Length: 488
Ligand SMILES: *[C@@H]1O[C@H](CO)[C@@H](O)[C@H](O)[C@H]1NC(C)=O
Ligand SMILES: *[C@@H]1O[C@H](CO)[C@@H](O)[C@H](O)[C@H]1NC(C)=O
Image 1 (tube, rainbow, N blue to C red):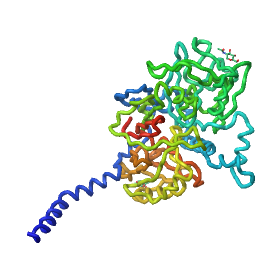
Image 2 (image 1 turned 90 degrees about the horizontal axis):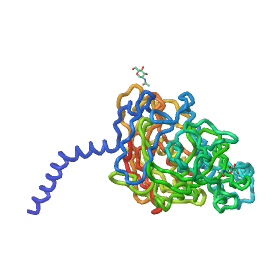
Image 3 (image 1 turned 135 degrees about the vertical axis):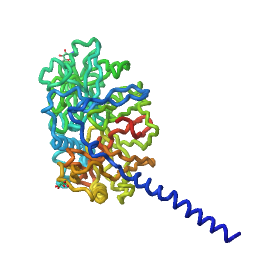
Image 4 (image 1 turned 90 degrees about the vertical axis):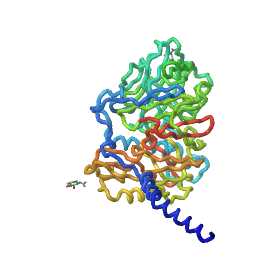
């Protein structure tokens, strides 16, 4: 008996392996690679129709999210004014530069450092403190998404860029005493709204403008004046005001505080202004805290021919499973949503990156940054592993900040390694194919990640890598969720 049992066990193992293990290995392979129709990687063309994502059964209050450019955009004044891919990537780099300046730990050091010569970024910071309004917000960039909100009574529809990387909401206001850039919607006219009022300079709310715009408020007769400048020298200056904000068809927020811009300039792409979803007291999320409990979620569509959602309150996702990681805050960048990125995989293989590589400069998630920025060591590990897995495909020249590009024009399908991101709280996401590449055309398909130069610079999870995920910002519970397949 004793000798028979092992024989049975062995033959069972052999039997099991000869039938199942083969399939298992095959499945594993497919698990770690995307087999992709090359044509599906191409950006939407203007000839394509807008094909909105199905809304699903979201229970919160949802707004439709559209890409600023392309078939679903209602904003485009003139297609020829659309930025080129190189311009989009350059704007992205200046947005990232201004985020780095706002959160770089060196900023914190400045106050205590007496030996001025040793801090290279010091000069820039000093200049910022002198000029007014301070260069404070992020560059608006070109990779942004818009939503339609209603303002005033009766309500007027306005298309605003939504931005988790800034706090202050503003729109251009008639009579545009100094200047307004061209926008698609009629300019908001406060004199036509029965619920509009200016905020006075003596109001305590006026003092809160400083932290939301990074510039001290001014005063014109008795009206509180705000000024916000973005990294690329776009700006908005005007009256600090309140009015009724309508989100979706039925939700109304009374006494919503915002900027009524009389002097506005910059790359706002035909939008009426900006909606700030950061962590500051004046952000939409804080102002609507009692209504929505400091929870919002969004899904950014993979193509400009589709749409996503921005939902306030719980219930913004119908993804079957949401994986949560702690949402962190940092005193060096109090407006931003920090997350605990810990590791990465390429084609199922864990990259050897020391965990301190990510913690050194911190990692934040931003809706307006296009390309994910990684610490130098993490990017070089990713780049090496990805290039190795893609070695069968011919390389193409770099595209601006993207140095790992392929010419796929001779292929109909390609096999690309999946990229996984591991976060604190044992959360892991695997990027869909749309989250891996930035595609100029089939002859220049580039890995949509870039490396920071400095190991202490903040890393940023950009919006290419967020595409099609339902991303849940549960600020109240201090967690961020990812649900795959939130929109197309
Ligand atoms: C708001 O303040 C400005 C500047 O003082 C003034 O011109 C404007 O008429 C005020 N609007 C309202 C509705 O009070
Ligand atoms: C594509 O195929 C053509 C014809 O075989 C060849 O001449 C060309 O070099 C190929 N291009 C690339 C990028 O491999």
